[in-house]
Amino acid sequence: MNKAIIFDMDGVICHTNPYHSIAFKEFFAKRNLFPTEKEFALHMYGKSNSYILSHFLGRKIEGQELLELEDEKESLFRTIYKDQIIPINGFMDFFDSLKSAGLLTGVGTSAPFANLELIAGSLGLIERMESILASEHVSKHKPDPEVYLKSADQLKVRPDACVVFEDSFSGVTAAKNAGMKVVGVLSSHTKEELPICDLYIRDFYEINVNSILRLLE
Image (cartoon, rainbow, N blue to C red; front, side, top):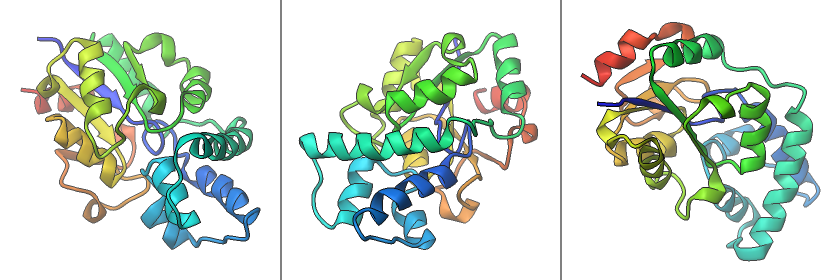
């Protein structure tokens, strides 16, 4: 049976959340809004842009307005982040070991494809992964399992043969809702702030291929 490892991107492949905070602060400051770091922790990390913008702007943001505001904020993020792309400790070595072991890999992110292209592209991951899904590729966002079920479909594996790496409450919930094993990456949250995961790591030096395969036995 084929086995697959699927990664979320923000907070899992790279620790981007501080840079998303900077971009959102600039975005909201233009509108005389000044959210605190605590508010961001509750209402930004791991959330979709439609939720974040609707929450902080105090009204439902959808349709064309959502596309325009999202593009403005994500363009800010890419400008801020493009020279800062450093994977979380041990990620590249761990990824290389997965490929050496013949495991299928994918990415399933709530971020727009342009962000995925910037980050996964600069790390040389896109051509090495068998499934690449961003926010444009799904109609329902995490905690809905669509992105992970669609990933399994693209990878041609059963959901119970997949391990997902996630760092947010909604992301872990999405992976569990898809019937997959989950490794919680503690880059943005503590264990207590996440749903129960099968394993937890602070970085990728704390895990290896054998521990992943044991999860799938």
